[in-house]
Amino acid sequence: MSVRAAAFPAGLSKAVLILALVALTMSGSAPPPRTPRLIVEESVADDFRALAEETWAEFLAVFRYRTDCFGDVRLRAVYDLDSRAAYDPTTATVFVRVPGSPALLRSALVHEWAHHVEFQCPAQRTLRAPFMAAQGQPPETPWRPAGATAEMPNDEWAAIPSEQYAEATVALVLGRRQIPTKAHVAPEAVEVVRRWAAGEIR
Image (cartoon, rainbow, N blue to C red; front, side, top):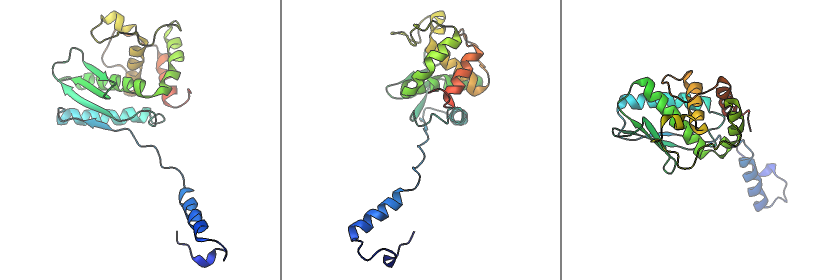
């Protein structure tokens, strides 16, 4: 925008003119929030990178109304992981055991990215009560018991609401859970995650 000095009243001081120009510049709409990035480390082979980036785009499409609430996430491929995948909240890094089938890798990625949102986005707490109700869990059930680890027995792991939420997210993003686990996920719980991801639960 060009501004001619003659267009302003004669008594308008230079300082007021500058303030007016700053106000005009800042009156536009705020820039959109930055989209969280998937940072793929060198340990990830090209075919896995392509699969991960495609799956990340699907994940962001589902969580597009929440992308201002969580940040970037790193992806590292490992060969000696005890479980199929893990998430480190201190570094926002997902570790995935390779090699694996595309279905296994996609499921592992979405599961761990759900934990990324869980740990990074404070608003994720608002889905927990309706999610546990949809799952038939008593409201006093701990979302994630202290000391819960990937090495715990499958039956105990499957009963953790946090893990059920991650599996519900897999069903939501990928259309179904392609890799069976012992974690029961009710269709109503998947709908709760969908509504929260769409910004309908606050």
